[in-house]
Length: 291
View 1: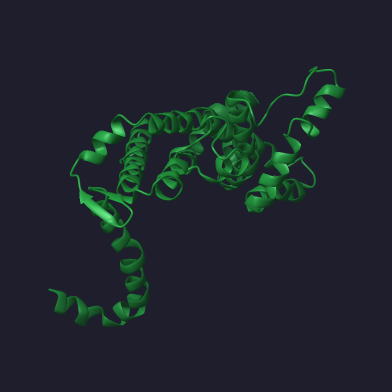
View 2: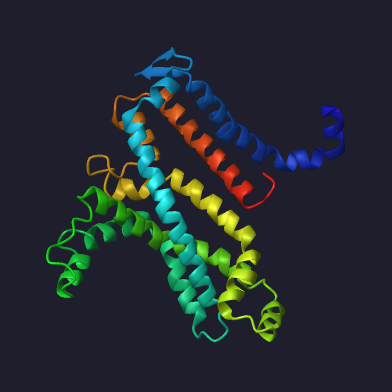
């Protein structure tokens, strides 16, 4: 069988050989090795087989449960707000009556290509206790004292959610904008002739046509949020009192900050893989697509 495959497509196999070797060495091997590693516990360079011991530890690990709770809060709060804003902005920028659309699209999209370190430093400055945001709010007499954006558990979460919205809303907006431009205009013209108002046109024409893109962006945003690491690490370092720590940051801490235990870190990583697979399946089923 293998000989026949090689004979019928050896040129093709030669073309993909380098990519295939790189995939096997840098992707498939680490996946398999980390899965095997998840059944071990390590102290330094000493690895001990624990079987399902890491899973039992995971289920009773209070720090992991805190990190998981924080991650789910980001997922439940930030992702719906971001996607609603992305659809709203895409709808506005798709209007034929709007001038300078290219400028607005570029400005909204730019945050997602901004340097992570640069924008993290900027956010830490403007959201500091004596930063720009508090000064503006105080000058407008909306608050009397500065809000502890980065030192209070609740407001630290709000700051990270705002940072995520600023960075990724424009990225998702581009997908919705591309989908909107592919909806036939005669569908809207026919609806107007029938007396259907803009509000109903949006919910009965636009939203159903955006269903595939909405499913795609929801799944990708879910995956990105469950793997969230950069913003909490750069803005709050997981504080105060671990109130903004995510699962990915906890994996990093278990691997490099605490006493390194790569086996347990691998187990936590596969718990994230399982959650992503489960939530993606639920979203496919909810959307009525074949998973």
